[in-house]
Image 1 (cartoon, helix red, strand yellow):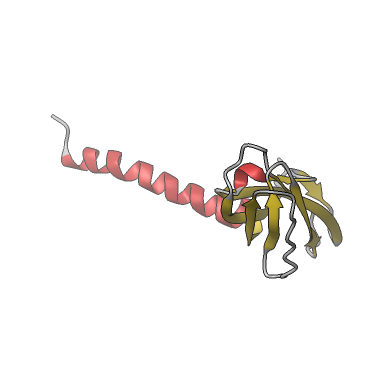
Image 2 (cartoon, rainbow, N blue to C red):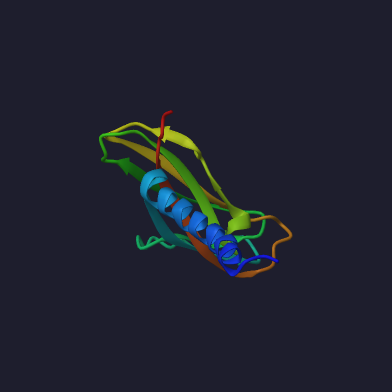
Length: 142
């Protein structure tokens, strides 16, 4: 028969392991991350609407089969290089593409990134939204 102490150790070990892994990731791998809201209104026809608000990545009105472009500038003010990863989330994510992803950004540099919403011709009209997440990861050598 299995003792209660052994069973307790078996149950606690995976929890502690997960907590240590999360601590490692949050404190040693991820240097910083940013989330920016994104949205697009997919419309019928060829009228294009522009939204120039700077509080997010707003593509405005984009017709089916069309595309909208927005530009973001990433800045690495740190004294170390970082690995840059960009992901999109939400129902807009299937339309979103970035010009550069999964790259190393050197210290004290800037990188201009084009964010594109490419709407397929068969997309449903309506409002799509989500988040663009940019993660600066520490480069761990070893």
